[in-house]
Amino acid sequence: MRKIEHIGIAVKDLQASNALFEKLFGAPPYKEETVESEGVSTSFFMNGPNKIELLEATNEDSPIAKFIAKKGEGIHHIAFDVEDIESEVKRLSSEGFVLLNETPKKGADNKLVVFLHPKSTNGVLIELCQEIK
Image (cartoon, rainbow, N blue to C red):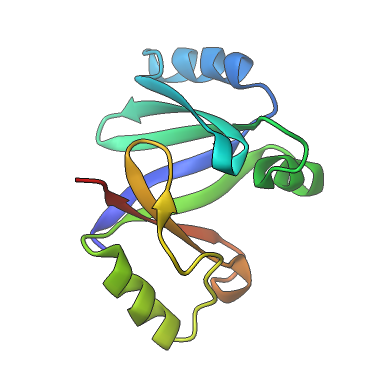
């Protein structure tokens, strides 16, 4: 893993949260996108070298809707940039981490993504991200 790629924050209302974070950072989101397969609408903010992703559920069965129902709004995941997602999946699986998806799938912001189950990472949902080339 090379660096923290972004921090994901689950929100109930993306537009209201965009306005809040725009005031916080002094700049609007640089990108908004819907990922139908995950049932989520997202927006991305840059703060210096740091990226923040806001996530709003697009349906009540989505992982974000379930997260908010259980825990409320807040930090949902930490994503790490990886050079070779498939080798990282093999390495982490061999180390005993539980993967939510062993096959990388297309995520937001032009990334292939794999998630590690929070039960195997001290309660933190970890996302691995590799730029799609």
